[in-house]
Length: 375
Image 1 (cartoon, rainbow, N blue to C red):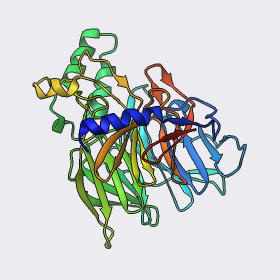
Image 2: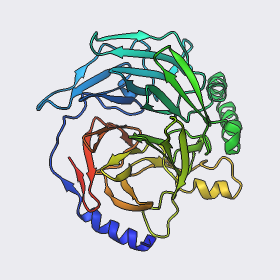
Image 3: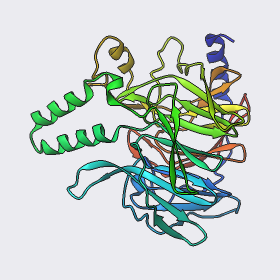
Image 4: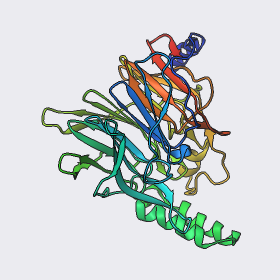
């Protein structure tokens, strides 16, 4: 199928979007830049715009409502790395203000035990920066993909804060930070993992693609998908990679076709903060945000590629099947930086934000190759 044929079919699929009513209640608070995970039939989400709040929903019980967990002891923070393993919820790192009110990356670790309804701070710290990173679990370990460089990111916030009310000084700090080529941000290119048994971190080797922040990372059986993400602040990539665990528990990677553009003749900038996961045999990538025009400017030598450009949040839902991308349909509204949880062959989309702010919306997304179902 050619790109033109795919886009034509996709337009027909947009008309076939099915909305059947709400399956689960919306969140009690607006949620963006937080994290979440699934333990059995219970969804857990929190932090980000929910500050130190975490909430749980029993997905198998009709008419269930969101229940508040004890407040997260690490304080309000955004962009944490959240994962579930062996019936417990793990929260790593994030971005929060220090005692002086300066935003900083942190790399601590906490665990929540649903049976005891208690949080515990773990006696460990992640070896690499965690903001912009994403996690998946496999074989008794929590794997971490991507993430910003802790020292460089923290240095930027410290310098910006030190400029105080000096607008010229702030602009100088911003230019010094943003006017760099992508490799000089040292985004994480090491796949690393945490093993609760023994409280140990492991180096799983170098990833065969550039460092990412805000990439869409999802696992389906032995398959791991890493789609798009920032390769430097303000600049995304359209690249997609797939990893498969072999019999020895090592990931073998291959490059997949890059994400197509939603409109014929347009350039796909790549997305950060997109929802992603599998619905049956289809891999879905939905929503996300970028700076249209940044990729071309970077190609032309403008390192501060998104300078003066507007950040745009998208609603398009893309589907990948047998190595071919198509536009499946669109979300009811643009959304990014929410949480995606796979459940019973469908995807739960929890929270997110558009250009107007965070949302409490909860949707269930599924796709059969012809119709995108949303409820």
